[in-house]
Amino acid sequence: MENIKGASAPSQRNRVSVKVKTFVLDTNVLLHDPQSIYKFENNNLSIPVEVLEELDAIKGEQSTERGRNARRVHRILQELLPDSRSMHEGVKLSNGGTLSVIINPYLADPSRRSAAMERLRAILPDLSKKDNRIIASALFVQEQNQPPTILVTKDVNVQLKARAVGLESEDYLNDKVPETDEELSYREIPLSLYELQRFCSEGAFDLGTVAGEPLYLNEYVLLRSDEGKTMPARYYGDGVVRRLKLPDFVKAPGGIPVRARNLEQQFFMDALLDDSIHMLTCYGKAGTGKTLLSTACALHQTHDDHSHYDGVSISRPVIALGKDIGFLPGTLEEKMKPWLQPYHDALEVLIPSKPQKDPQFASKKVSKKKHKKHDDHFSAQMNAPQPNHVTQHGGNHGPAVKPYERLLKSGLVEIEALAFIRGRSIARRFFILDEAQQLTPHEVKTVITRISEGSKIVLIGDPAQIDNPYVDRRSNGLVYCHNRMKGQSIAAHVKLTKGERSKLAELAADLL
Image (cartoon, rainbow, N blue to C red; front, top):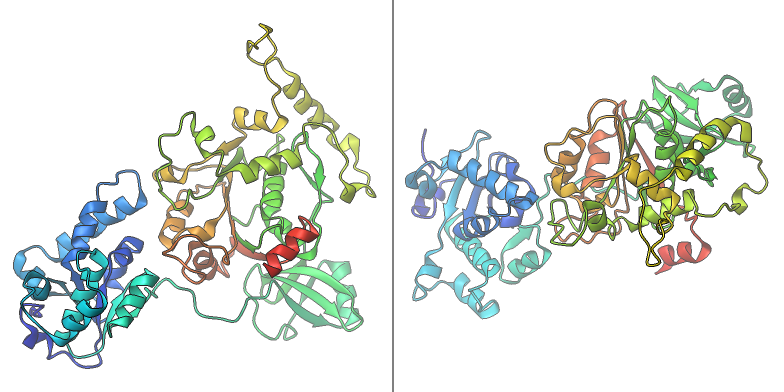
């Protein structure tokens, strides 16, 4: 194997064809995807020694995803660069590219001068900062190689600083979904009135060449006739669409009945209630019903002897997957409660402390006999003697416990901390992952691969609301998961656009 010279022998590197690019990787790229080293095809990769220092500082984070990824990168580099010679001269990768570690001599010896380094010192004089030193190393690589040299970083500010000193810079694009126009929440398929009537009577229809642009498996559509009549449907493959399988309502144990309020929510409920769909992704702005509907449908399928699942697991990232929860007092549920308060609010709505009538059900009577047996059983559980709690007055009656809190105590509803999910095997659970747009693709993969046979996972979030600085609307785990799993027989996707929380909430989501 012929070694390719690195920083110590620039004359060898200059022999590389101009068609080959040289990529300099920032620390956050390796932490985002440890396998990124193998995903630059037959181009040259350079890793500044400052990146190794940053990885060394992070590898000690035992309970975080960042720490695990840092250690994984170290193992990969140890295997690829087993000695000092291979590290400095560079090695060939299996994909045809090269890899080397760069030590910038201009930083070690400030008396050495070059036009690029003078420009860097004038614009970014503080070279004690790791980011500035990485940019300096990338400039050195640019000087020693034929163009183009590109700094790859997920830090937008580093990208801007690199461009300011004349260095090309870009985001890590390997796991970004393709740039497309704004995705519609659903597609409409025109049918004749006769064809629509036939669909209504038979429950299925063979589209043939009617659909035009191909549909993907489990895609939700709206059939529309020229007369304005409509009917929702789902695509089952082989050109066939079928009617949605929706009950009159869904109901948590001891709670109020819930119905879909709009067409998109009908799509969402159909996917939530179909046990043949094991993974569901859902986009939706604030107030569209993501949390409430997913919780209601989950509890609806877990409260009787013929339930599909043994319970409901709920979680969301604490800023990011693996972020340490900290030394907060109390149990895991108490630590996670501030982050999962939206689900406590949803459970309070679904299972109110005091019986109440919801206006949306005023015109529809709910059969009492159908659910009497289960409701009696649940009421008995609610009224069962609880462990004694001594009050301030010395009595044996403890503070009032909200009905939904009994679900938490019984284990029917479980709080999951993503920081500790690695290694688990989640069987026969309905798993709801909220704020999934805050996760990286690798982190979402970590969660989904924990789901065992008989379980279902629902990933919900709003790609327009991202706080994680290292993902965006095209590279976050939610959109990546939807893009890669689209068309699989056990996966479905729904987009909610109509707010149902209140007129004020919808206006705020749209206009502010």
